[in-house]
Amino acid sequence: MSKHDDLSQAILDVANSKAAPGEPVNLLDIGPILVTEKGYTELEVADALYAMQEQKVIELLSGNRMRVL
Image (cartoon, rainbow, N blue to C red):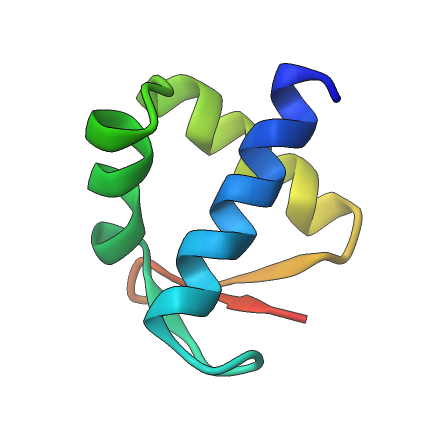
């Protein structure tokens, strides 16, 4: 797996640990875990989120939230 694939999976894992699939998750609840515990940069996380939205894996919502589709 590439680092991007690993990060995408980490985003999904953390998001699903914070809320049921389909429920909105605050990005401020998952961002610190990805950066401080998993070692990704903020830019890597942001790039992955935009790519995942483009691929229709997640939906970015207002209020700094996302939803796993």
